[in-house]
Image 1: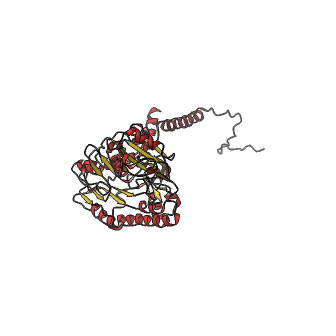
Image 2: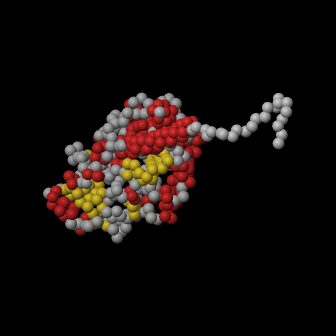
Image 3: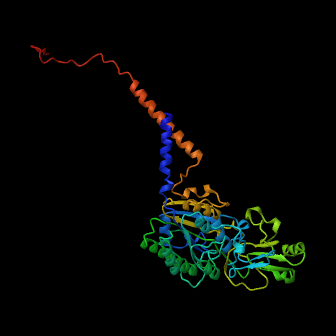
Length: 452
């Protein structure tokens, strides 16, 4: 009986898992900037739906605070919170080095070397080389290494051109490209311009993004890569609607000679020029739709405190509100807000031999994406903040059952087997009833038959 149960449990596990050795380990990571999770429900996106049906979907990904582009793209490829990987904003200032960082001045390795992104690890561990089509940071010598193939950022290069180049790299046999990234600026740019609630304009943009997905699928199929490569499609953040009626005007509260504004709305980084506490007290009284934190008071859940590039005072606007010094509103959509807000969450979809088919789950964290990618690429990950159990159910080589579920299955099988065994024993031991009147058997060799 014990042997049977062991064999039964082994069979169940074998049915729910595949050998890691059978797993294709090449991976393409794609980001559509600013793709809010609920866009999937709001708009008809046939190519993306086809992609999802053939793979897995995480309906909402909880991204890192602050929910901006550079910090979250680096979190995805390092598995670290922003305070740990050092890219804490789109605009930064390091007081010790007296250096400034911006989206247009981002190529100094100084800013990136606090972490090791996956494209570096992939090349260091000898499983092939990496390639990148404009993913933030990939044109920088991080740990003195860039991807073997990369494109310097140029917004004028079309998505189709980026895909064509990526497919060429993936088809390169010497050296083999085992990991590649692909970045596209939409629907973020249009989300800022129109706001996410402008369904007429955003529908056109999202349909174009969906066509880009279709183009990528077509090129991967034509190149013979479709059945062997794993593809993850995700984003860095969502988008919230803004309004000219929801402005927080700092000039109404504090003189500009008191502080330097390092990073802007909706999470503003303030470097006081005067007494820090005085600046803090003035800002605290400024507007009820803005939270004001001293660096040491930033909530633990933000994981946004332990880095020297985080400024002494951080301002966090409520959803939909915009922090300005005295400017007019220049956009109808924005991101950067509290990462607990659903409007800030992106999604994740993936397909390929490493993933289950037709599986959906509600949530995961974007720090989980890095260890998941390392698992697929068979890399030993760097220290990270991800959790294996948050993504294991997405993977084809993992059996997604908890210990209580396993125990329940085994007990259920034991009860069924025991019942079945008892029935067989009862039937075998059942004594047949006596037969006092047996049918008379006539002997056909008798000379005289008795009749009547």
